[in-house]
Image (cartoon, rainbow, N blue to C red; front, top):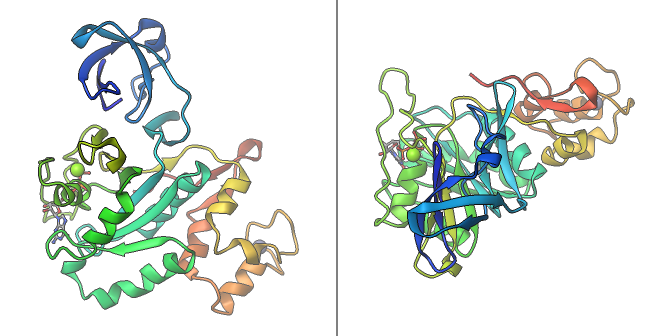
Length: 306
Ligand SMILES: Nc1nc2c(ncn2[C@@H]2O[C@H](COP(=O)(O)OP(=O)(O)OP(=O)(O)O)[C@@H](O)[C@H]2O)c(=O)[nH]1
Ligand SMILES: [Mg+2]
Ligand SMILES: [Zn+2]
């Protein structure tokens, strides 16, 4: 499955042919205004030839990235091995809380995260070392890059090779620009960030699976639309704990097993922050704006980010 456009989708056969297909009516009954039954990256079974094809069913997904929109689950991409989380040094201002949420989503789905801090040309790269360090110390690949100077692009190309990768992040961070640099034949649409409010213009409107070369072993990327807000689908506590790998060892020392690391005494996490062993912002992201024990013992990760 390459791309979903309303009621029809572009699919690619294993021999490379691309066809426009409609979705079988029974499957469509599962869809809603905010949700399509098929997503970019899905493997589907199709009947018919050429542009008269009908999607009969969707193979079980090995992974997916979903978000919540008006209480409904919305699958952004399916069957990816890794996700490049793109943030920016500037224009728009970096939102670490958004990186944290994408990390939770990736970890919970067994997808390897890679963090790209793009537009490094707009600032002194030394100013990015603290934020990059927080994630690098947690064991994540962090790439400082720029489509203007070419910084970091060779490393990014190496990370993408042979894998299926979703490229995600706020609008205007340069997701499509990065892919255009990696493969100039793509000619994906890009647009400048508004000078008034520093926000992207939501240029990419649908997630699209793109082959990185003629040879299927070269890998695939999914360019995704910048998100306005990112409220994660529900996760079980263990998954959130796994995503906060820097907090987890300290949480083992909390007096109360259900410690929320906010008002409790003898909290291992708060001790660690006080001792400078844990990034204060990461602690905040996991408590105030971050994870909270929700209804039915399911963790919801924070309110929508503005
Ligand atoms: N200075 C600078 N500008 C960049 C860089 N990368 C991208 N841009 C600019 O940022 C703007 C937004 O880039 P896009 O590629 O459209 O961003 P996007 O993330 O695909 O945005 P959506 O499709 O709206 O989600 C464009 O004007 C790009 O030229 C960079 O490394 N440095
Ligand atoms: Mg784009
Ligand atoms: Zn605690």
